[in-house]
Image 1 (tube, one colour):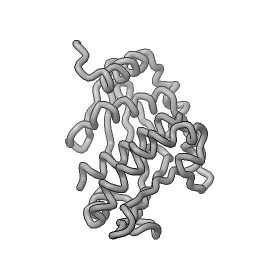
Image 2 (tube, helix red, strand yellow):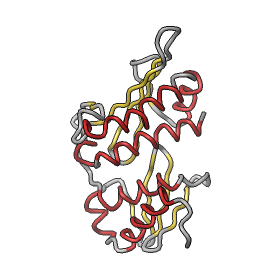
Image 3 (cartoon, one colour):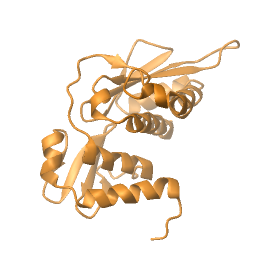
Image 4 (tube, helix red, strand yellow):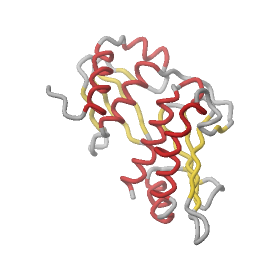
Length: 203
């Protein structure tokens, strides 16, 4: 296949090949929220269940809806290849507070926080409706805030403030503390991106 979009297709192809060599029993040892029936893995991302065939990769949405975009599929491959269950201690952390957060904070701020502020904070009502449609749990922070289960035992919150004549809209994303051990910093960035993109699609 000729690669058209190097930014998305090259990393996807790299992890697709690694996935082909993956031993299913290794996944089941690391991730309790993933099922395997001998032909495919089944997992849930932001409330939607997906079946991922192995060893020849193919993904299917079990609700019959659209497939996730390629960066999200790459994230799911990395999850199956590298992540593991980590117990949540009940604390919430900002991106900056987790390992390597300071190093990635500038791209993270633009890609996640600023995008959340101007995508969600300018349309609070539609944000609430989209979050409720996704089955999120409201939290009493910000002008609007919701808690989501990303995948497995990993939780996220998005809090947004609408802004006014003096201040622009703003946003904060919080991660359950197990993200610090269960995901690399790059994947925590992508997790924020996926959550915002999914909310936007539901708005």
